[in-house]
Length: 455
Image 1 (tube, helix red, strand yellow):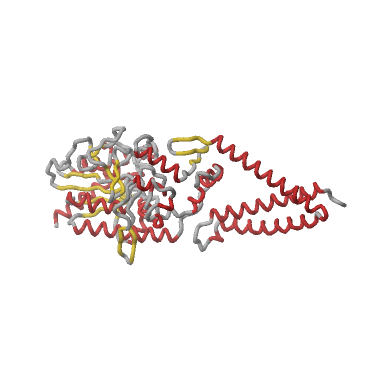
Image 2 (tube, helix red, strand yellow; image 1 turned 30 degrees about the horizontal axis):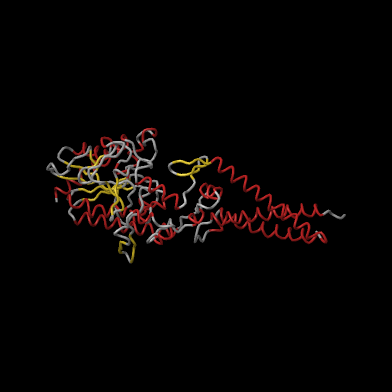
């Protein structure tokens, strides 16, 4: 039976669709495959690569056979099949692109499609950062009038500040306080306790009266001054540097280090703006671990405006030491790419975590913990590490590697009803949870103070 040109073209068209489907499966597997992972073949991405490759080989052979069987009508059938295929793919792509653009909504945080926040391209991130730093556009509860650029720490609490919403105040020394124009040194205290850490130590999103530091002050008594040196977004490296420069001159008897799960990852980063999409937090110091020693890489830090003048991420200084800036994720963020691609890569981000990065994270942070503890003890104070959140398994592993004992307060917080444990954003402890943390830590601080007195 002799087939018509249209029949041959239809068979070629069907084979082309199957080839393209197999190719898409291969590309999806390659996209989701973890970089430098020896166990790739045992992962879902590896299975997709194998299945796609087999499908590509089989469908390719079928396509070749269909073309060969078209005989004298080969040229016309192939032209018709390929043309129809290309037009179908183009129309389908345009329809999907149009649908995504119709569903897209512009927000102060960027473009959102449905429940998916489309990851910003570099120019978009720069524009957003400039607006946030100029206090034109709010970002979460971060406040440019309260946090200021710091050439050694990246950012810190500004002296004698009030946030726009009135939630945060700082003393003239740049320490969280109950109000402005407060001088922490105006009164003589028998003993001082210093808190250092990230947003959980700072008690972000709650007023001073509901903060961990305030509750701890109430429990320790009127002759003990609790100073809250916590800063939102800090990694272990910034905590160490803040202790060295800002905490040490106060000569505290006890230094409480509040640690959360994400802090270790922050230590590995040079540009939180790029890695985490934090437009207020542009650049931070970065340590390197070399032969069991620490080397500070990039201090003094460049001004935010200098960084925001870069035309692309690759131009940023020391960007090669930032694991997030070199990921394949940034290859798909060009602002000229179709929104469909950016939406898909935001909804299904590539795998970036590797065993090597996890090992580097534990190594560097364990050295920093050792350095912090040693520095505090040499200054005649007692260190107390408090695990505020144990969701990251690297934290106890890293503390164990550094031989650092710690107090895990997550069980104390777990006693608080779930609906009252966190603030509305779900990111930080509520005042009730901060009170529970204070009740858990106060006995340990009192023992440390008593131990110091006995010495």
